[in-house]
Structure formats: structure tokens, C-alpha cells
Image (cartoon, rainbow, N blue to C red; front, top):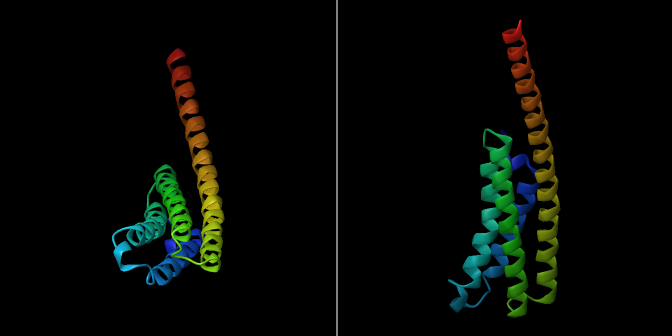
Length: 143
């Protein structure tokens, strides 16, 4: 288990979420249940899933939640694009938030790759152990 608040991907996603909340306060009131709700939910879902993955017992479970976080980050990126297209975000605001989104993607990608390696090493070790156990068991049956 990891302390989610010390994970760079979580920190960058958390900063992105705070920025999105600040920028969406000026979105039109009629969008409160539309794009405002969706972009906020997608962005905080990233940090929530990173946190959940960090607290899981197995690397495989952790990886599952990190991949969900990556999907939520993709949704966030789309809603940023859509908000700019609707002129709810200026060019500068959109570029700034998209850049923050890209930094979160990079950190999350690194975390996913790291957990994949850890899971792979564990899986290979388990496979070697079980193969040795089976081989030893067969040898003892033959003797």
C-alpha cells in the first residue's frame, strides 16, 4: 500500500481538479448539471481512483484502478476541449488546463508502468515458485 497523497500522479491530478473547480465557477448556470458537473466529476474521479488503487493489497487490483483513473483523465481532457469549443474557457485558460492535464497524464503513465513492472516481477516470481513446487512434487513422487 502506498500513501496516495505522496504519489506525483495524485498530486498533479489534485491540482488539476482544484483548477477546474475554480475555472468552472464562471460557467453558465444552465450548465450546472451539464458540462460543469461532468468535467468536475471526471477530474475528481482521477484522484479518487488513484487513491483507491494505492490502498489495494495486490498490484493487479492497483493497476485496475489506475487504468480507470487514466480513463477519467481522458474524459477530463475531452470536457476541457468541449468547454473551450463552447467558449466557456478562453484560449489561455484552455491551454493552461490542458497542460496541467498532460502533466497528470505523464505522471499517471509513469505510475502505471511502474506498477505493471512490479506486478510482472511478482507474477514471474510466483510462476517460478509454483513451477519449482510442482517439479519438486513430481520428483518426490517418482522417488
